[in-house]
Picture: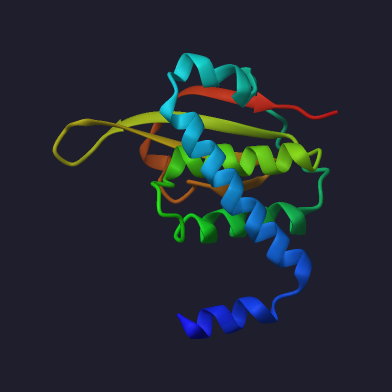
Length: 147
């Protein structure tokens, strides 16, 4: 743990702020997840609207948001799985003026039970949940366009 703290202390201030923002956005997204989905769906973007796959945003920035959210999700004391990560990353991109699409999918686990998954894409880059997305059928998507 001490080595991780030393490594964190050596990071540039801009990166520390990004990771702190990711931590706070994960907390905010977890609180949202406690609410009925009908109440949070309008905050996720335009229902059944997919943003373009062309990417006009800064790819390095999008990838750094992805890395910050995925890393900090391992250090939260609350559950920060796929939907929480996707919402947090979406809001971080929105704050930076970058469009994204949040996908919700369903599938079955090996025992045949219905399971759900969420992932986020901005342009050509998948930020969260991409490792498992091919195992799920998209049932809803929310496009977050930023002008």
